[in-house]
Image 1: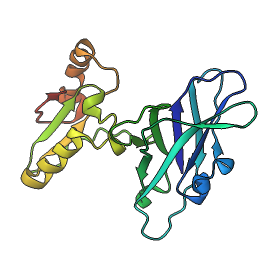
Image 2: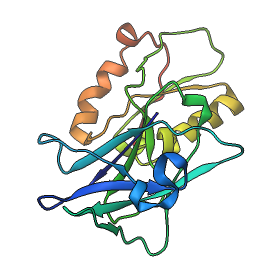
Image 3: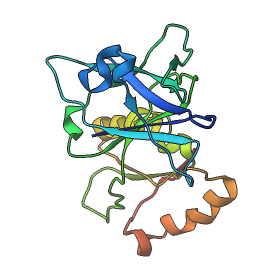
Image 4: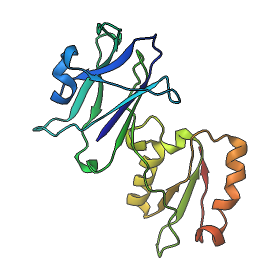
Length: 204
């Protein structure tokens, strides 16, 4: 399941629709677009849940948002003839994937999606020949704006594991600043609280 969401300011009677390259998204036919919804406490955020079925060797889904007036007339978002897109991930069909598209009319450099309510685990000490490395930082270190949060820390974790057998744990959080990071630092670096015997903290 994919939850597409976008921030869009609308006038009374207007709404936001989604149309794209798959049958679930209307095959680019605006009259068959998917209507997004909003609420008083979440506006200007609009969203919809769509179950996109796999088809052949499809690698990605392309789409755009449209603004619908009170009479149902649609206006395409202006993206200079470029479509939004997301990769198809068949390994996470049991999860809800949040597709965060930012703002209506603004195209992000890369698609940003993440799994809703992922399990957060701080592993206890395990027998390992490599080091246990802790990364504590803000949204950039967390992987914000990278698909499935696979940003620079994720890439670093793969490289350290493959080359040296080191284990990396990312405890970064969105909105953290220097003061917040310093305040959290002692908790994660205390062996009695985390079970770690060795730490090599990285902030970012």
